[in-house]
Image (cartoon, rainbow, N blue to C red; front, top):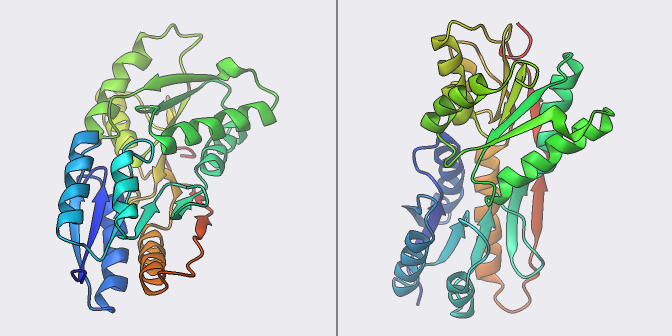
Length: 278
């Protein structure tokens, strides 16, 4: 039979978003006598494949995964072998269960807020854009710009190699290099870690947030409220995502035959703090 272990494959163990997600998974798994094995794909397709085959060999009870890119043949193979797979923080077609957040709407909330604060030149910082969540947040940002009757070039896109603090810090140079008339007065970052990095770099340049640059993050991890300048952020229900994903996995495991795949989508909300409205 199957083991009592659930594999949770995440993109970046260093991001508290995934730690909070894991807590939600563990709460629900624990009450069913299951243990959770946390696997860090580190945004790398090969590592993702490695963990999937490892979990399949160990006959895992099921797998919860935030995929690096598209749903891969390796994932399909796991599902064909009878191991239930639920996508987390990523929508899916009807062929499997998924729990996600409406990232497009989240991007709209962030940029509509900046426009309401009077900003007309904005930056979008995030990447790689091949990550679905990032491209969806950018699509939402563009939708907000169109809704306000502004032109496409109201948003300058700065693609980052990773969604981490160092990438956010490095963005400061790219912003500073832009000519003054194109330089954004506000930036929407695809996650809070990027926003922290940019915030740090901005203060290092003796610029004020939000006076010289307003910054919005995404996820609303616990540190967002504790930043040197408390961060406005788009909140995702992180623990709830984990709990819901684990419940879908239990559902699928218990009703092997008549199982109907479900796609649960949560709505994000904007939490306004000093980084945009000092």
